[in-house]
Image 1 (tube, rainbow, N blue to C red):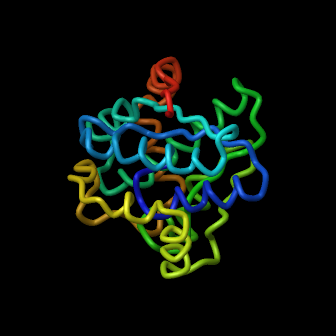
Image 2 (cartoon, helix red, strand yellow):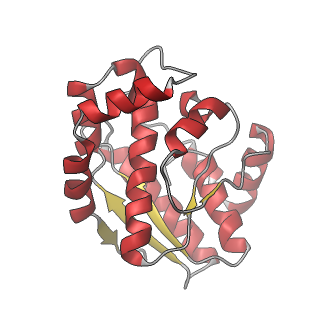
Amino acid sequence: MSGGIDSPVATYLMLKAGAGIMILNMDTRPFGGEDEVEKVTGLASRLKEFFPDRVRLFRAPHGIFLSSFRDHSNRRYMCILCKKAMLDLADLLCDRWDLDGIVTGDSMGQVASQTLHNMAAVSAGVRHPIIRPLIGLDKLDIERIGKEIGTFDISIRRTNGCNAAPRFPITKADNIFLQREWTKASPHASMEQVAANVVELDLR
């Protein structure tokens, strides 16, 4: 779950459907700021107000991945490599924590990593089910739900964003080229380092 509008709404819909949720926030520092981290904590706390016994927040040092992609891979693939790293880490944690699936806030075609082609590319090799509750909703539908549950005003707080994102991201990834750029960054070493440093935060 990020600090954006979509993923908190997706999380809420799954909680409303009866799921227990372990929120995984990818901390992009030094490419993102402390303000984004605080925003996610606020969103998770808001969701916990609705479902006090079924919300836990974990944070992973995603900047480790981003640094490696920046140094070794084609910059235009950064958003897709970023999303692939998120899903692969979530897949690994599902195994280690005995979880059933992965929930994302993807809705069709809103950003570079969410074109249908790119969603297929980053999902390749993920063994656990990927659930996308917002896939058929348009932005107005998502915003309406966010306003109803009180996450929208938190999500739209202005932050400095992620400065790792390229100016012209790839919107139709070539799978062979994507895998090549992924391999260049030695992701397995980064994966173990990130997974070993996932921490749970106290939500009050």
